[in-house]
Length: 342
Image (cartoon, rainbow, N blue to C red):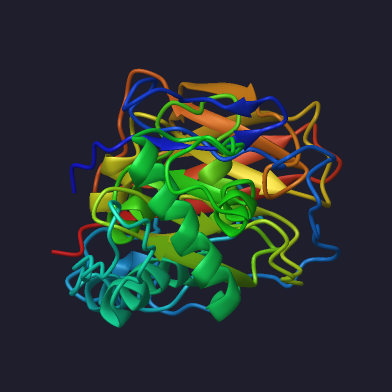
């Protein structure tokens, strides 16, 4: 699952990665595009977590090992989505990018074949399932504009959320989508995983936060063989999770936990004030594990967010970790159970 293409994110002053393939390996999507503010539909009131089974002792998940057992603070949420390993394997069985029908020389955006778009949407919804959020749905109009955006990024050979009219294959539809999308020099399916890792965005983690946003509802997915756009802003979603963590409470495949170790864990909320929050992580034996906490820039998919970077250790399959957030307007405690899905 080694993914190297640059990705980029809109911020008030533009893109964090510009030039032809330059900048950080992965960029991050900002709170707004084109100015004005984040335009978020923040959550109000918690819907709780998806009722899960098989989180104690790691049972109930396909080929899972380890489990939530040991010494954890009272009141910590331990149950997450059910049958995570089975869902992880099924939804990742086909990661093919599909076939692009367009052409740069004639500035034809074409389209990505149905399997490519379906595979990208399935990955988005896999991650949302794991945190107990409703599925996103792709919208034909947004797909078409995102496709025009992907063509522009490929034609110009770089990424921007504010492309000028001098750009190759410029179109108003493409420019609109560029300002409201996660954008990547990679094709659309692989980009979803890169957005969740979100390299190069340690002040925002914006791509991940938008995918896990309460406000995500309708998306637009456009892809070529060298660039892609995922329309995420103003999605119209009305989920009511009070807070969302990544990795989430309950079972999480070690494959993914290991994949994101270079960036870190996050928690986001539009309802709980995290400005003065501190974080403590303990393992199943009650041993405190060092962590460096960054208060992320606001209004990237949620009002507040924290980045937690594990310091001097990595999460291991078969172990579980309690994350305690204190100093916030409401305390938060949950247990991440790292499982080997085989």
